[in-house]
Image (cartoon, rainbow, N blue to C red; front, side):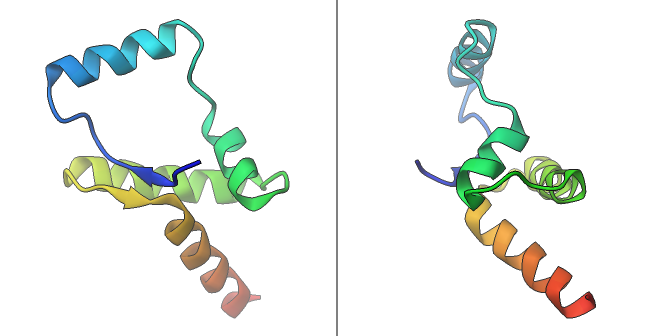
Length: 80
C-alpha cells in the first residue's frame, strides 16, 4: 500500500474519489494508520495525522503518511 496522499488533480478525479467513497471503497483514517503501524493507534495520533493532512490539503501539497507518522512518533518520544 502506498503511503502517499495528494489532493485530486482535477474535477474528474475528485468525482471519481467521491464515487469510490459512496461505494464503500474508502477506509477510515484510523484504519489506514493502523495498517501502516501494524497496531491500533491512539486517537491523539490519528488526530495529529489528520491535522497534517488538512494543512497539506490547504497548501495543495502531497504528503507521505509514513513520513508524517515517523515525525509525530519521533516528537512524541522526545517529549516522553
